[in-house]
Image 1: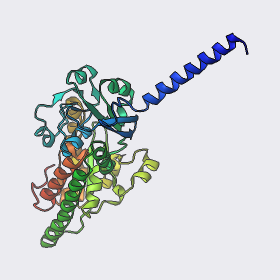
Image 2: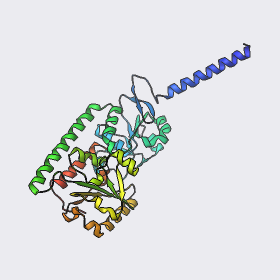
Image 3: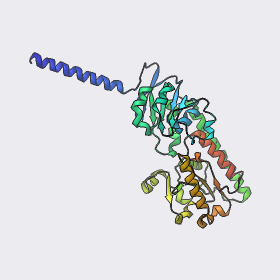
Length: 336
């Protein structure tokens, strides 16, 4: 081997070593000292999460709710008109760092976070986020996965014991709701368990929310029934409709929206779209096919808040409270 060949071989070896070291270091973003953080695998890679999180930023409503439920107050979050009052009351001095689904990198940088957490759909900006602070992204494919996602957040934030207590309380509330509805149904001569229909009105469509949606999981946990057209699992719905938690119906098939009780909501990301959805609901209410529904005839159709779309345990508790109000206390009558 000539001296020139030897130099080339050594140079190549150094380049490969440098490349390997760079890749190895990149596997744990913002790792710092192993005594200062713990390693978490997530949707966008592997991150070393600080042992003590003091300045958290959340990238979406689901992350905001899960963090607050676990006792971690964010210094920044993407706040919008869709953040329900149940969360707004807990925000304190949380700074707005962008619109829903559109985190602003400059605003995030300005609040000096020491940790950032969000859902998997933010992967496009993950490289920039991880340069600001250690960042974890959690996959959340549909709302019916809220329990699994909450568990993942508790692992990332090292608050699993708190999460277990919260979910234990949730199960107790769902069980108590079941018993209260059974007693109320017996005293009022109503069918038990009632078939509960859940319908969302979009600006241009009528959608049934299915068994494994957020609210569908709560109805399951409370032991309540669903109309046949809505009692479809996420896997079957994905295969049949291309959507695991909801399906559109035409006016001609409006009977699929019927049940012993019918819950309806509207709500979009912008005020303009929300107004269009409300106008669509008003047109539907004037339609004779809507008036012929059994739930309308028995005055058991209720307009509920758009937080029924669901994110986490705080909203799950609020939804159970709503179900108690409408199915046990029977008020108000026919709010649609």
